[in-house]
Image (cartoon, rainbow, N blue to C red; front, side, top):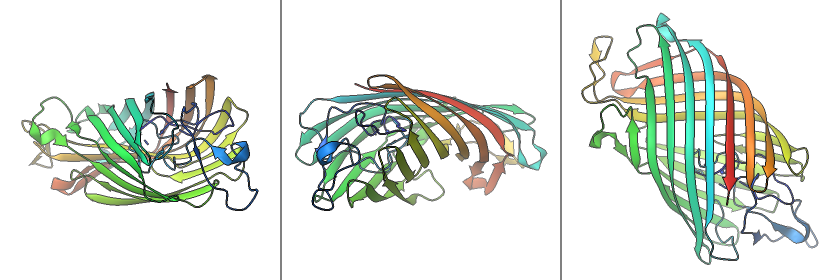
Length: 342
C-alpha cells in the first residue's frame, strides 16, 4: 500500500497499494541494464530510472493493497522514505436488487507508509491504513451503514536475481462495522508477489492475495506495466488498471478502471435479519468496480492533487454464510485525492 501515481517524468519517481507515486520524487534510484548495447531508458538518460519495480503501486497508493514488489535494491542511502495519501469519493444513488430501495455511498482512505533499505536487495516496509465506506439507504435495508478496515502494514521487498524481485506483505487489523468489536473482527490478509523485469520499459508480475474473510481465500492477480515512451504508461494491473499520458512534468491525464472493497464481520449482537435469517456475526464481502478518467497535478515537489470522475458500473454485498448477494444499478461517482512522499 502506498501512494498512487499517474505519471512518470524525468524528474518524478514512480509511485503507490500498492508504492511511491509517480507524482513524487524518490530519494532512491536504481540501475536497470538496457536490453541492448546503447539502449537508453525512456525515463532517464543513461539508463537510470526511478523505482522500476512499481508494477502496481502506481495509482494504488497507501490507499490500496500492494500486489507487487515496489523497490527492492533501490536506494543508494539508508534514509527512510515516508508516503502519505488521503482520498474521498462519492457515489450517487443507485437502485438495489429485489426492490430493496436505493443507496448512495461516501468512501475515504487515509494511508501512511514508511520504507527503508535494510541491506543489499532488501527493503523493509511498515505503515498503517484506514478505509471506510458509508452507505445511505433509502428503504428497509438490513445491511450496516458503514464498513471499515483499520490495519497495520508490515512487509519487505527482496531481490531474488537481477531480473526477479519478491514482495511479502501482511496487513493485520480490525475489519467490520466497529459498532461492536471483538476477536472475530481481527484478520490478517497477506500478499505474496513476484515481478520479472524484462527491460527498462516492460515488466510483468503475478501475485497471490490471501484473505480468510474472502469467499475465495487465495486469489491470483496477474498484471503488466509497459512504458513505451516518456509520455505513455500502460499500467494494466489490479486494483487500478490505467492508461496514462504525461502532458508535461507536472500534469498528466489518465483513464481506466478501479476495484474497491472491504471485507468485514458484522457484530455478534447484530439483531438484523435477511430473509428470516440472522445477520449476527456474518461476513460481508463488499466490492465495487468503477470506470473513469481524471487528471493528476504535481503542484509542488513530492505532492500531487488528483481528481477523477466516471461511473460505478458494478457493486455487490456478498453474504457467504447466507449464500446471498445484493447488487445495485450503475451510478456516477467523483473522487479527489492528495498524495505525497517525503
